[in-house]
Length: 370
Image (tube, rainbow, N blue to C red; front, side, top):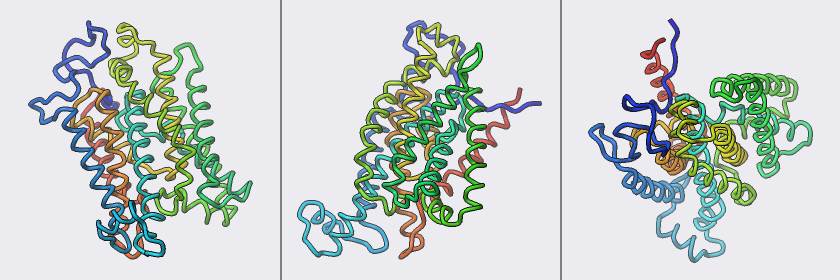
């Protein structure tokens, strides 16, 4: 008896091909966001709700913290700041940067998670599956231990470069062989690469206490103490990655039916998968360099989006892009409130939310046996 995971987007309906050639999952849900008897809501309505949610959680991020700032004072700090006003300084110098970084990092993580689950057809895939988090972490270790860098802005390009190198190595290794890149090979090579990087990281941390002290603050994942100037260099990469991600919906819909069916629908499977992996690299590299290797955002968000609008990846990717920052900023605000005047890192709070979801997915997968 072998247990297998359900595909992230199972085909709906008896026909596995789409005669229209649109690359949509067949069946009644192929409209992607149309209301149905399953309790799903339309895509535009879901987007509207999430936009409102983004505004509310952004306001909460500016208002609540170790000390609360009145909404009127927040408005004044944004439009007419007064020099020397403590509330205005807190809002402009501390909370605006972490809110903007949370918005960008959350959007990148959410979209990357949706892409990973679609391209690997694995419902428990997240951006770490390709070894991207491990590659970025190893690069940060090199920055600290080898170059003595101890600031977030100094880690930035090391983390981004490490993520990019990891994706290139994993994708290149997975492409070897006559069958080329497959979801299973991507997952296996990514797991092997992650294990290798983790072993090297552990050896360095056990032998260098200074590196351990510097690294642990970045590794846990947080929006705090991130200066706004770290956002500018990575923002173009995030924009390009999101454009590629939002354009990949039809390709992901076709890949969800299997490579053979996707080819029959006119999709270039190799090119499509390569473009998706490129988007994942841009998004994950940017997010990890900004906020650290925060887990579970890329895992939880696509499942919520799929439950809301159905299996159409054109809507799943868009909703994941909006829901990611909602979750990340909400976790950051909760971390400030539960133990104030201290705070918990956003990565820890997200893990508390994501772990039960992962357990629920594993329990669900036990019902599918070969």
